Amino acid sequence: MTPNDPIRSSYRGVPPGTRLNGIYEIEAMIGAGGMGEVYKCREIQTGAPVAVKMLLPDMVDNEAALGLFRREAAALHNLPHDAIVRYFLFTVEPVLQRPYLAMEFVNGRSLSNMLDEGPLSFEALLKLMHRVGSGLQAAHEHGIIHRDVSPDNIIVPLDDVRRAKIIDFGIARSTQLGDKTIIGSGFAGKDNYASPEQVGLYGNDVTAKSDVYSLGLVLFHALTGQKLDMGGSQFQLVEKRRRVPDLGAVDLRIRPLLERMLQPDPALRPTMAEVANWTPTAPVQASATPLYGFDPLARPETGPSALRDRTDRTPSTAQRPHSLWLGAGVAGLLLLLGGGYAFYKLVWSAPGVAALPPPPKLAGTMTPQRIEPAPPQPGSQEPPKLPSQPTVTPSPALDAPGRAERIRRYVAQYAGGDCFFILPVAVSPSAAVIEGFGASTAPFDTFDKAFRREQGFEASVGVRQVTQAQCPAVKFLSQVGSDQARAPRINLSATELKAGETLTGTIENFANRVVELLMVSDRGEVQSLSYLLKPGTDSLSFTLPTARATGPQLLLVVAAPRVLDSLRQPRPMAADTFFLQALSEAQRGNTTITAAARYVLLTN
Image 1 (cartoon, rainbow, N blue to C red):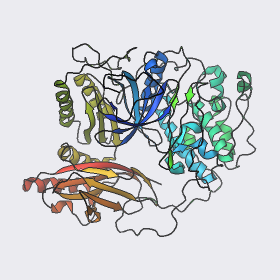
Image 2: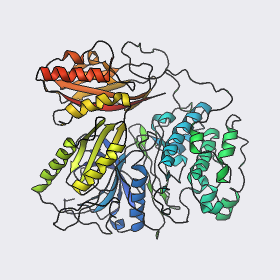
Image 3: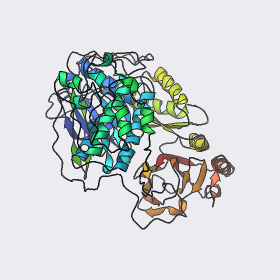
């Protein structure tokens, strides 16, 4: 394929090596549906994997398909929760003339695939319920109803339910935008897990309580290994939901909760917050799992690690066949990748549905630029609607690099307050992916509006929320971390860890400078871990031991031309004092320092 030869065949797909907006590069197609394809890509600058959903060429003028893309972007873009797949970018690739949605690549398999091998243990079920329930609670708090909660839409990396992620918000409904669901009054989702109101009962009024009902059916399936028979004809769908289904096979400890979740009347069901925080009245044997943190003095355990929340079985290494669902508008994909399953799904609606409003603020729609030579005009608060037939972006070759550089300078020079730090992860003349650190999302909302006003399009902003006690570290980053070209690069084995796991990583791009490794706890204590660094070829490696702490941690790497004693404190020190001393020593010695940070979440 030449750069000017857009793909026209849904069977060939887009070849590996194709670049999308200069930000992502396609590695392989991992699935296809009737209206689109899913690709595994890498971010060109960082090498990080991403998943990209792309409309087929023949569907770019289909308002229903475009509406679904806007719906998924709108649903995901304000939901920074670890149990929800993270959204990055929604735009149109100018050469291929195809809209696409870029999001977090989750290497795992579906809960439905896990349950084919047997039910979860009771303790694993509770942790799955708390994990998924907290993610859906976050969605509900942002006014988003998923509307298709099912085992197919829950992905479980490494068969560890504590890492489960909810996917496919493509048919989600926003209660804040005041609009109708994308499929009008019709049904979306899998009929077996639909709520009574989704099949026409109780005024057909789908609210957050609908997700509670669907999750109740998922929990029944997960605990018993058998899904309740709630499908059938339209008449059967309705009749089976007029009463609470038979729960005789359910463990008595959780049966009262499921009875409430599966009440036909939404008003009688608990909220998702109640589900996420529910604990059984009878004692449950819990694993003696220590909290995970970083304590260089802690001795690593030599015995068996804490219970991994998996069923007692060996996961199959062979890919299970999965059909492509198109009946109610759901297309599923399952791919065996590197010993695990990389699971992504395309969600579509029936033809003739109404288009949705574009995504809201903070990480919303990238507006495709048109052929007109005039520069792009600033958008309104609501990003413009995608064109019915996207056209090729103008390509002023001499101006494109300069425009991207101006965007980088704008981001680097933007001042958002003492606890605010942003850096461009990937930038092109018409798209930008930006990562931020801060204790509140409010200044990032302000930045988003300012960026759109100045640049004429909306950036994709990912916010890593820290504690107030960690704000001195964020302020330090804003003072010394904006020089991305000279900043050290940190590669981590994981960004979310649990008890019994070990964090490993490497540091690159430090040339001949002295490197210091620091950990800033959620309590605002800074600890030097530089003694754990091991030299290698053009890189340093480290392995961080365990401790008893949870919460967001900031891993900082500081590079300087000489040793700074203030960065090598023998004992933990308060962040405000630590970074003030470091900056003072650097200024006194006229020493230029640069820094980079990674966000690591430690959980039980």
